[in-house]
Image 1 (cartoon, rainbow, N blue to C red):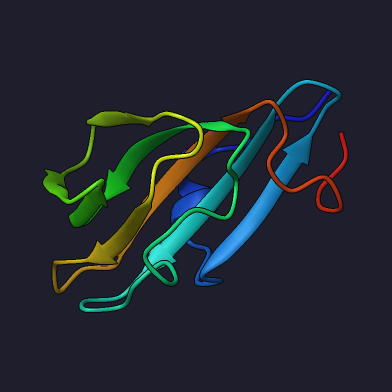
Image 2 (tube, rainbow, N blue to C red; image 1 turned 90 degrees about the horizontal axis):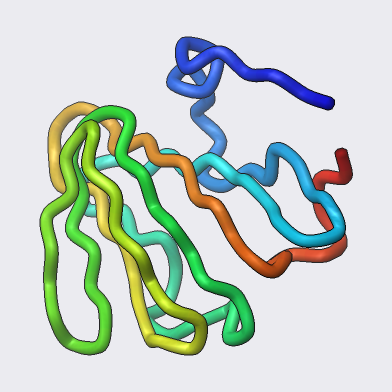
Length: 111
């Protein structure tokens, strides 16, 4: 069992960090500065759905050639296999939580 405080997560400046992994799911945090992409446009978790929840700042989420702006308190579902990319949009770092099911990165963060 693990517990996190939103303040602790918001203070992380590491671009991507898996917080915990179970047999069936995973949670990670991501921090992107203005103009910084999450990676190449594509998918690196083709078998896992991703729920992306914005904590602070704003980001542009590109999914299958559609664009969505995500701001604190908003959640987007990126179904498994869809090409996507997230880009920090605001002067304040875009900080988000991602929930994956099933596990997207099996070698990181065990609970």
